Length: 92
Image (cartoon, rainbow, N blue to C red):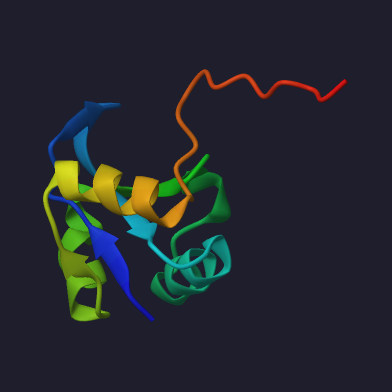
């Protein structure tokens, strides 16, 4: 199981946030997050938002530290990227 986390650099709600992602499956990501006690409501499209005070917990649990750019690259390469505002077209 490989899960990745970027540094807490994303501001919101008075704190900084990291992104927790998998390059294998959402099931793997959900299992890892559940093991950390991260609530499912923290899942947003293709990643978990992780508050800065939980960053070290994720690393200790086995998440690999990567840059924010690397998070996006990993998601795209795996086919798991779900960009905000993406509209899926219906086939005719």
